[in-house]
Image (cartoon, rainbow, N blue to C red):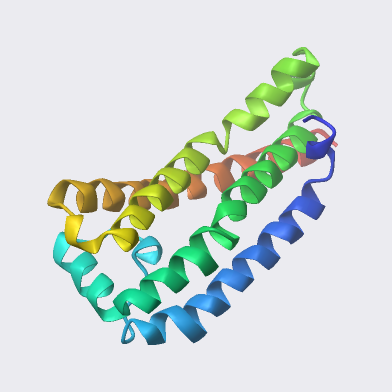
Length: 178
């Protein structure tokens, strides 16, 4: 694992390409298929049960199937992992320049670095599972299911920002020591 984290820029480039593909698919295929409605997992402030039903209905069966296959089973299956590994790699790279972090055993350094993006990854994958469940069986969408997915969407964005802030802090701290 530590070896994989030694190339954070490569991981970041792969994550960026993956993200770009998701954005293009959303803008050119999914959003038009939903009558211009934003995908549930792009709504930074979450969504209501009514929003979910409106989006699911607008997509129709073919649109829902396409999003499951071309978003959740492909690009959004790999993006959280790539992004998380890139974040952990950057944290590891820059934090190792700091005396206190450098004094930790290598394994502890790796675990600390992996812990930074973990909340983001868990929230993103959890949200993905719940949205796929809604896409697969829209008639079974409950208020509780939509609310849980909505909360995870909000948390995903919050944890993403927090992880990026930690990377920025590690970079700034490392530059001060150079």
